[in-house]
Length: 298
Figure 1 (tube, rainbow, N blue to C red):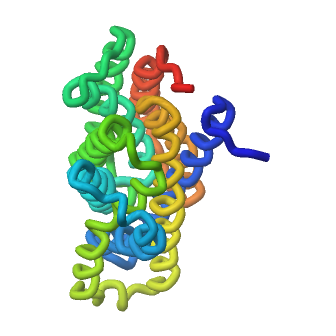
Figure 2 (cartoon, helix red, strand yellow):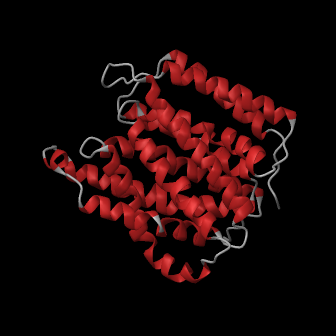
Protein backbone atom coordinates (compact mmCIF):
# COMPACT_ATOMS: atom_id res chain seq x y z
CA UNK A 1 0.00 0.00 0.00
CA UNK A 2 1.48 3.30 -1.11
CA UNK A 3 1.38 6.28 1.25
CA UNK A 4 0.38 9.33 -0.81
CA UNK A 5 0.01 12.52 1.22
CA UNK A 6 -1.67 14.22 -1.71
CA UNK A 7 -4.62 12.03 -0.79
CA UNK A 8 -6.95 13.54 1.83
CA UNK A 9 -7.47 10.19 3.60
CA UNK A 10 -3.73 9.71 4.12
CA UNK A 11 -3.44 13.28 5.40
CA UNK A 12 -5.99 12.47 8.12
CA UNK A 13 -4.31 9.16 8.96
CA UNK A 14 -0.99 10.94 9.51
CA UNK A 15 -2.73 13.66 11.51
CA UNK A 16 -4.31 11.13 13.90
CA UNK A 17 -1.02 9.21 14.15
CA UNK A 18 0.75 12.41 15.17
CA UNK A 19 -1.95 13.19 17.74
CA UNK A 20 -1.51 9.74 19.28
CA UNK A 21 2.27 10.16 19.59
CA UNK A 22 2.17 13.73 20.88
CA UNK A 23 -0.71 12.93 23.20
CA UNK A 24 1.59 10.49 25.02
CA UNK A 25 4.47 13.00 25.16
CA UNK A 26 2.99 14.89 28.11
CA UNK A 27 2.86 11.83 30.33
CA UNK A 28 6.42 10.88 29.27
CA UNK A 29 7.60 14.35 30.29
CA UNK A 30 5.82 13.94 33.61
CA UNK A 31 7.68 10.67 34.23
CA UNK A 32 11.01 12.24 33.34
CA UNK A 33 10.41 15.12 35.74
CA UNK A 34 10.13 12.66 38.63
CA UNK A 35 13.91 12.14 38.45
CA UNK A 36 15.34 15.02 36.42
CA UNK A 37 15.01 18.80 36.41
CA UNK A 38 12.90 20.55 33.80
CA UNK A 39 15.99 21.83 31.97
CA UNK A 40 17.54 18.37 31.97
CA UNK A 41 14.37 16.80 30.55
CA UNK A 42 14.21 19.43 27.79
CA UNK A 43 17.94 19.15 27.04
CA UNK A 44 17.84 15.33 26.95
CA UNK A 45 14.90 15.41 24.57
CA UNK A 46 16.85 17.71 22.23
CA UNK A 47 20.18 15.89 22.52
CA UNK A 48 18.79 12.35 22.17
CA UNK A 49 16.86 13.49 19.09
CA UNK A 50 20.03 15.08 17.71
CA UNK A 51 21.85 11.74 18.06
CA UNK A 52 19.02 9.93 16.27
CA UNK A 53 19.09 12.50 13.46
CA UNK A 54 22.89 12.39 12.93
CA UNK A 55 22.77 10.03 9.91
CA UNK A 56 20.12 12.22 8.27
CA UNK A 57 22.04 15.37 9.19
CA UNK A 58 25.07 13.92 7.39
CA UNK A 59 23.00 13.16 4.28
CA UNK A 60 21.29 16.57 4.18
CA UNK A 61 24.11 18.81 5.43
CA UNK A 62 24.99 19.97 1.90
CA UNK A 63 21.49 21.43 1.56
CA UNK A 64 22.30 24.22 4.04
CA UNK A 65 22.75 27.51 2.19
CA UNK A 66 22.91 31.20 2.87
CA UNK A 67 19.28 31.53 1.81
CA UNK A 68 17.90 28.98 4.31
CA UNK A 69 20.27 29.15 7.29
CA UNK A 70 18.15 31.77 9.07
CA UNK A 71 14.98 29.73 8.71
CA UNK A 72 16.71 26.55 9.88
CA UNK A 73 17.92 28.40 12.97
CA UNK A 74 14.34 29.50 13.64
CA UNK A 75 13.14 25.90 13.27
CA UNK A 76 15.92 24.62 15.53
CA UNK A 77 15.58 27.07 18.37
CA UNK A 78 12.08 28.60 18.14
CA UNK A 79 10.32 25.51 16.80
CA UNK A 80 12.17 22.78 18.72
CA UNK A 81 14.35 23.88 21.63
CA UNK A 82 12.35 26.63 23.31
CA UNK A 83 9.05 24.65 23.32
CA UNK A 84 10.82 21.55 24.71
CA UNK A 85 12.10 23.58 27.66
CA UNK A 86 8.85 25.48 28.16
CA UNK A 87 6.68 22.35 28.24
CA UNK A 88 8.99 20.64 30.72
CA UNK A 89 8.97 23.76 32.91
CA UNK A 90 5.17 24.08 32.80
CA UNK A 91 4.69 20.45 33.80
CA UNK A 92 6.57 20.97 37.02
CA UNK A 93 3.37 22.67 38.23
CA UNK A 94 0.44 21.60 36.01
CA UNK A 95 -0.89 18.18 34.99
CA UNK A 96 0.00 16.53 31.69
CA UNK A 97 -3.65 16.39 30.58
CA UNK A 98 -4.04 20.15 31.05
CA UNK A 99 -0.79 20.71 29.13
CA UNK A 100 -2.24 18.67 26.27
CA UNK A 101 -5.41 20.73 26.22
CA UNK A 102 -3.52 24.04 26.16
CA UNK A 103 -1.41 22.73 23.31
CA UNK A 104 -4.55 22.96 21.15
CA UNK A 105 -3.90 26.72 20.91
CA UNK A 106 -1.28 26.05 18.23
CA UNK A 107 -3.63 26.45 15.20
CA UNK A 108 -4.87 29.76 16.57
CA UNK A 109 -1.38 31.18 16.89
CA UNK A 110 -0.48 29.67 13.51
CA UNK A 111 -3.29 31.73 12.01
CA UNK A 112 -2.44 34.90 13.93
CA UNK A 113 1.28 34.76 13.14
CA UNK A 114 0.53 33.90 9.51
CA UNK A 115 -1.54 37.08 9.24
CA UNK A 116 0.95 39.31 11.07
CA UNK A 117 4.29 38.06 9.75
CA UNK A 118 3.67 36.01 6.61
CA UNK A 119 0.89 37.94 4.81
CA UNK A 120 -1.50 35.01 5.05
CA UNK A 121 -5.10 35.88 4.07
CA UNK A 122 -7.95 34.50 6.17
CA UNK A 123 -11.72 34.77 6.50
CA UNK A 124 -13.75 36.56 9.16
CA UNK A 125 -14.88 33.14 10.38
CA UNK A 126 -11.27 32.28 11.16
CA UNK A 127 -10.78 35.58 12.96
CA UNK A 128 -13.90 34.91 15.05
CA UNK A 129 -12.46 31.50 15.94
CA UNK A 130 -9.21 33.17 16.90
CA UNK A 131 -10.98 35.46 19.39
CA UNK A 132 -13.03 32.61 20.88
CA UNK A 133 -9.99 30.37 21.21
CA UNK A 134 -7.97 33.09 22.95
CA UNK A 135 -10.84 33.67 25.38
CA UNK A 136 -10.90 29.96 26.16
CA UNK A 137 -7.15 29.93 26.71
CA UNK A 138 -7.33 32.82 29.16
CA UNK A 139 -10.08 31.06 31.08
CA UNK A 140 -8.16 27.80 31.17
CA UNK A 141 -4.98 29.49 32.35
CA UNK A 142 -6.87 31.11 35.21
CA UNK A 143 -8.46 27.80 36.20
CA UNK A 144 -5.25 25.80 36.00
CA UNK A 145 -4.24 24.12 39.25
CA UNK A 146 -1.53 21.67 40.14
CA UNK A 147 -3.42 18.65 41.46
CA UNK A 148 -0.22 17.03 42.68
CA UNK A 149 1.13 19.84 44.83
CA UNK A 150 -2.20 21.25 45.93
CA UNK A 151 -0.94 24.77 45.33
CA UNK A 152 -2.39 27.09 42.71
CA UNK A 153 0.31 27.86 40.14
CA UNK A 154 -1.94 29.08 37.38
CA UNK A 155 0.67 31.15 35.64
CA UNK A 156 2.82 28.14 34.75
CA UNK A 157 0.23 27.43 32.05
CA UNK A 158 1.51 30.56 30.30
CA UNK A 159 4.73 28.68 29.47
CA UNK A 160 2.64 26.41 27.26
CA UNK A 161 0.88 29.38 25.67
CA UNK A 162 4.31 30.80 24.77
CA UNK A 163 5.36 27.38 23.42
CA UNK A 164 2.32 27.30 21.12
CA UNK A 165 3.28 30.74 19.81
CA UNK A 166 6.69 29.26 18.98
CA UNK A 167 4.99 26.37 17.19
CA UNK A 168 2.91 28.87 15.20
CA UNK A 169 6.07 30.64 14.04
CA UNK A 170 7.68 27.31 13.20
CA UNK A 171 4.80 26.03 11.05
CA UNK A 172 4.62 29.25 9.04
CA UNK A 173 8.39 29.40 8.62
CA UNK A 174 8.48 25.86 7.20
CA UNK A 175 5.52 26.44 4.90
CA UNK A 176 6.50 29.83 3.48
CA UNK A 177 10.29 30.12 3.84
CA UNK A 178 11.65 26.58 3.40
CA UNK A 179 9.83 25.48 0.27
CA UNK A 180 12.99 24.10 -1.34
CA UNK A 181 13.65 21.58 1.46
CA UNK A 182 11.70 18.39 2.12
CA UNK A 183 10.30 17.53 5.55
CA UNK A 184 13.06 15.06 6.48
CA UNK A 185 15.80 17.57 5.64
CA UNK A 186 14.11 20.30 7.69
CA UNK A 187 13.62 18.00 10.68
CA UNK A 188 17.20 16.75 10.73
CA UNK A 189 18.91 20.09 10.03
CA UNK A 190 16.71 21.75 12.63
CA UNK A 191 18.36 19.64 15.33
CA UNK A 192 21.87 20.33 14.01
CA UNK A 193 22.11 23.68 15.77
CA UNK A 194 20.58 23.18 19.26
CA UNK A 195 21.73 19.54 19.62
CA UNK A 196 25.40 20.22 20.54
CA UNK A 197 24.40 22.98 23.01
CA UNK A 198 22.04 20.55 24.76
CA UNK A 199 24.82 17.96 24.91
CA UNK A 200 27.26 20.41 26.50
CA UNK A 201 24.66 21.37 29.11
CA UNK A 202 23.99 17.73 29.97
CA UNK A 203 27.72 17.01 30.24
CA UNK A 204 28.14 19.55 33.03
CA UNK A 205 24.72 19.17 34.64
CA UNK A 206 24.14 18.13 38.27
CA UNK A 207 22.46 14.72 38.49
CA UNK A 208 22.28 14.44 42.27
CA UNK A 209 18.47 14.65 42.22
CA UNK A 210 18.24 11.89 39.62
CA UNK A 211 20.67 9.62 41.45
CA UNK A 212 18.67 9.94 44.66
CA UNK A 213 15.35 9.07 42.99
CA UNK A 214 13.93 5.56 43.07
CA UNK A 215 13.07 5.22 39.38
CA UNK A 216 15.89 7.02 37.59
CA UNK A 217 16.37 4.43 34.84
CA UNK A 218 12.66 3.94 33.98
CA UNK A 219 12.26 7.71 33.93
CA UNK A 220 15.35 8.09 31.76
CA UNK A 221 13.78 5.53 29.41
CA UNK A 222 10.61 7.66 29.34
CA UNK A 223 12.64 10.69 28.22
CA UNK A 224 14.40 8.57 25.59
CA UNK A 225 10.97 7.45 24.34
CA UNK A 226 9.90 11.10 24.30
CA UNK A 227 12.86 11.95 22.08
CA UNK A 228 12.37 9.00 19.73
CA UNK A 229 8.61 9.15 19.24
CA UNK A 230 7.66 12.78 19.91
CA UNK A 231 10.70 14.46 18.37
CA UNK A 232 12.40 12.10 15.92
CA UNK A 233 9.42 10.28 14.37
CA UNK A 234 6.69 12.90 14.88
CA UNK A 235 8.64 15.94 13.67
CA UNK A 236 9.57 14.16 10.44
CA UNK A 237 5.92 13.31 9.75
CA UNK A 238 4.75 16.78 10.80
CA UNK A 239 7.17 18.56 8.48
CA UNK A 240 6.16 16.31 5.59
CA UNK A 241 2.48 16.96 6.33
CA UNK A 242 3.05 20.73 6.29
CA UNK A 243 4.49 20.39 2.80
CA UNK A 244 1.39 18.61 1.45
CA UNK A 245 -1.35 20.55 3.27
CA UNK A 246 -2.03 24.03 4.62
CA UNK A 247 -0.41 25.40 7.76
CA UNK A 248 -3.72 25.33 9.62
CA UNK A 249 -4.56 21.76 8.63
CA UNK A 250 -1.18 20.54 9.87
CA UNK A 251 -1.40 22.58 13.07
CA UNK A 252 -4.90 21.25 13.74
CA UNK A 253 -3.30 18.04 15.00
CA UNK A 254 -3.30 19.83 18.34
CA UNK A 255 -7.06 19.63 18.76
CA UNK A 256 -6.91 15.86 18.53
CA UNK A 257 -3.94 15.66 20.92
CA UNK A 258 -6.02 16.58 24.03
CA UNK A 259 -8.13 13.45 23.60
CA UNK A 260 -5.03 11.27 23.93
CA UNK A 261 -3.36 13.52 26.51
CA UNK A 262 -6.39 13.40 28.81
CA UNK A 263 -6.67 9.62 28.29
CA UNK A 264 -3.06 9.03 29.35
CA UNK A 265 -3.41 11.50 32.22
CA UNK A 266 -6.52 9.82 33.59
CA UNK A 267 -4.79 6.43 33.41
CA UNK A 268 -2.01 7.94 35.53
CA UNK A 269 -4.46 9.17 38.17
CA UNK A 270 -4.84 12.80 37.12
CA UNK A 271 -8.11 14.70 37.47
CA UNK A 272 -9.86 17.39 35.47
CA UNK A 273 -12.36 19.75 37.05
CA UNK A 274 -15.54 20.70 35.19
CA UNK A 275 -14.55 24.32 34.56
CA UNK A 276 -11.36 23.16 32.82
CA UNK A 277 -13.37 20.87 30.56
CA UNK A 278 -15.72 23.75 29.68
CA UNK A 279 -12.85 26.11 28.84
CA UNK A 280 -11.26 23.34 26.75
CA UNK A 281 -14.49 23.06 24.75
CA UNK A 282 -14.36 26.83 24.15
CA UNK A 283 -10.80 26.50 22.82
CA UNK A 284 -11.75 23.62 20.52
CA UNK A 285 -14.76 25.57 19.25
CA UNK A 286 -12.43 28.43 18.37
CA UNK A 287 -9.98 26.12 16.63
CA UNK A 288 -12.85 24.55 14.65
CA UNK A 289 -13.88 27.98 13.37
CA UNK A 290 -10.26 28.83 12.54
CA UNK A 291 -10.07 25.72 10.35
CA UNK A 292 -13.64 25.68 9.05
CA UNK A 293 -12.92 27.04 5.58
CA UNK A 294 -9.47 25.54 5.22
CA UNK A 295 -8.92 23.17 2.29
CA UNK A 296 -5.73 21.08 1.99
CA UNK A 297 -3.58 21.79 -1.03
CA UNK A 298 -3.61 18.98 -3.58
